[in-house]
Length: 290
Image 1 (tube, rainbow, N blue to C red):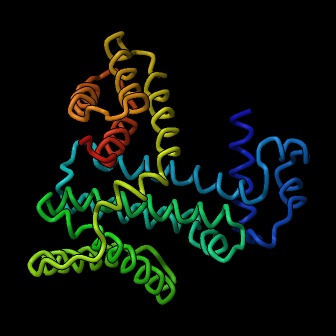
Image 2: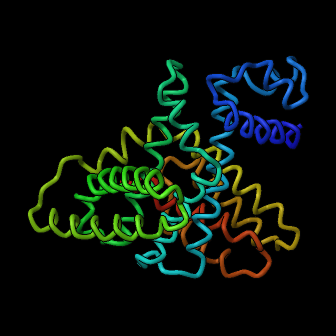
Image 3: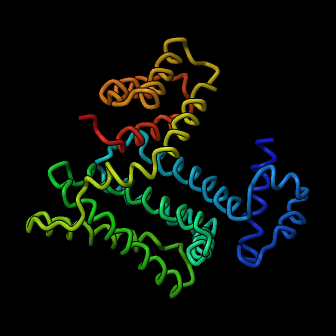
């Protein structure tokens, strides 16, 4: 059933791109995917939930590709960060997610609006922690502001660049320019010690909104790694330990989780290293125990 549902998600993605989300009816979806109305409502409670499933599936793939770019590289490398940002922009263009996102944005559906907000906050949070990697803990106080500004610059420049040149092939220039500007701005605000948003928002409001979805992803990633046939008993125990620490312990011991993940990264039996990289990113992005 999981594979069939995923197939429906992929076909519906094609249909929404072709006709637009608002213009597509449930009957259109049934005809295009070849499923019955009963099957549709068994999978999704509404057309809006189907659209959210499309975004979840797309972004799960995008994050996997993005995090894979860090394998064997330094998180402090600004060139790696540029590659990650470019990959994300190109992925959105390739899968035409921007046009679908715009349709979600103008929707009156409350659930869709909440989903959009959560997605925006997830992106801000990822940028924020990558900026800590790049600019250092001593500039943490200014990096939530810089994350929001960077996304605004990148979004607007990407939009007009692709409209003017009818292509996203040279989006490298836009990413390069955006990153260079944010480096300059970060240096400026750090020198002047000016701040608008407190980074504590990352550990309170944003984490509260993202909590449940993050837990689901942790379970999924751990299950994915456990599917590796060549795992030793010790490696299985390490994965179980990581899952228990992140999901069951009120204040996960990050230093122990980091150590376990580094051990798993070095083993030859795990081919899906990107899942480990993603887990490291989640651990890094959770609020520190007090």
